[in-house]
Amino acid sequence: MKRIATYTGSMLLIIFLMTNCSGGYSFTGGDVGEAKTFSVDLFPNYAQIINPNLSLLFTEKLKDIILQQTPLKLKEEDGDLHFEGSIVEYSFTPLAPQGNQAAAQTRLTISVKVQFTNRLDSKKNFEERFSRFVDFPADVNLAAIENQLIDQINRELAENILNRAIVNW
Image (tube, rainbow, N blue to C red):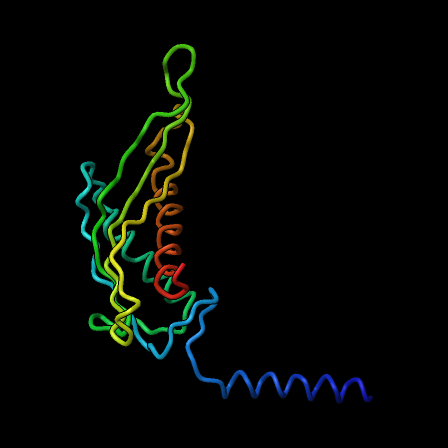
């Protein structure tokens, strides 16, 4: 009985602290400070190779990651935290040449240039290029896996951008 009372008391203390503490901590361990909202402009695609869906797919993935991993609410514009930029690279590079000079693997690289504005703390603003890649077998039909590869890279890019914005690593 004493153990149940201690457990109940501990749980009530935790619930009290969780409901009465202010601050904007996210699931990523980052601190959004006093920010309540965020906004993301469409990231236009200025890469030499244009995937017609990439701009929208990346922009939506960035919004989704922020919504999933922070307590922030999405605004159409003028959020406390604002993300804008462009896609500057979408490229395929052959890797690991074999004896017959054919590549065994291909690398898909996506790079984005991001301007982050923290309207509540301008010291946290930045402009930076983020790049991620994934390697895949060169003999695979690209059309069959391209969307999956893009989704994986977009997720990694979005998480990197979010971490840079609120964890400041």
